[in-house]
Image (cartoon, rainbow, N blue to C red; front, side, top):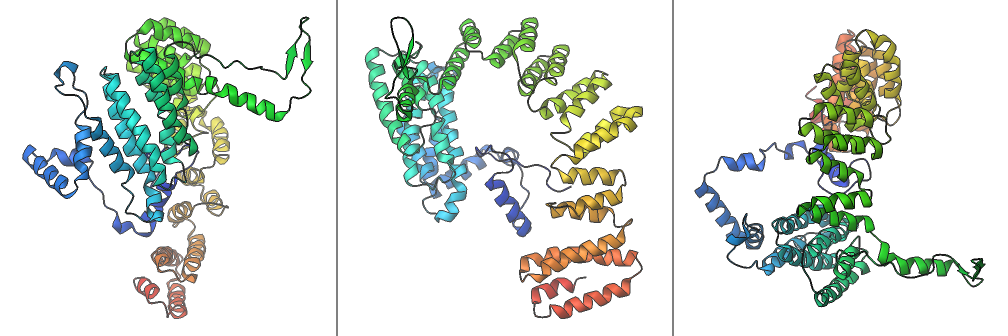
Length: 540
């Protein structure tokens, strides 16, 4: 089957695969022998005893002194009981760790370092997670100081890192929410708030100069106002004035520049308000202030979080009723249904899931989750409906088989609809696999001959129809082999040889072994000045 799916830890979310996955797959395609299957780190380390681990860590820290700061930062997190902590956390340990991460690409060429910026940002996120552990443990001050150092040093890293894809800047811009949560969790005097806001404004101003401000402004807003409502800047909302009789008068001097300036003046007071609400909800939930949490959810129409909290509180009837009335997307209902299933509330989970299939949004995740749950309850018709909802967005051979099995005697009537959806999908690989499953060889060949079809699809079809359409295999195999051999690129020769091997097999099935030998001889003569290719041809 080959590689059917891939994921990356970078922040890319614009559809398709990110540059890191593409680079990795290209490297694997051209240099597969440089890759090796390894155990997961936890599995590998589980085989080592305490003394071995101590010896290995000691050696690594001696050889790479920068690891000392990183390990010290990772091990200086909050204890389960705040009373057990005997000394104040040394923030400078975290600063050294952050600086080590930011400068970890210094020794690389720019073209090489470019590919590692995503990993650098992920290491900084690990530091952020360490800060949030302090916040979870009730030590908001330490969490805030770590986050502040993280903002300061990570934003300065833009001077050393090629952030063309905005991965470092994206991370810096996301720090507004955890900073706001830390500030909301601290008790500050008005004087402390003013000083804190000034300190933040300087750091955020620097980040903003490089386009990294993101949602950082909410930290300043919270520093100034705390839990109070954010005051909205007083400015006219329209290009007019009001007289005593409430008649609107046009301002003749108003122009587009004035309107732009107006938006800029109002922006600091209202920007990223959604992120600010999320920060407040996170703090209320962390502190167990349930009634305030629910009230804020309702006020700001955070319907998903409201229903999830009701579910956790086992107020199931209210949760289901509210969800049916207020949730508007399949993705949201999936989260609710999964939470209810975790709470062993299967009937309620199914009710919400079925409701979600009628809503807008992507239904693949919901359908693939709901289908097995419905079938486990003996609800075959409902399971079929769930899988049918998922199939157009995420077609797969296994889903096709499942739909066919669940349809039973109605498959003959349903199949044209399923195939129509499959033909309209982007995934020609699945279409080819389904046609091969149904032994529709000629239709599968048409797919393989289509435009913009990956060569892996052609390979799959060629291997599957070999016994049934060997003449086509000869034609397509020689076509691809000759295209690859025509270019003087040795990396293509093993792939060309694989196509020629298929051609050889197809010639044999057609009873034309002599014709194959003649073709091979002519090819060897044609490319006699290419020793790398000759080496591949000699193995055929």
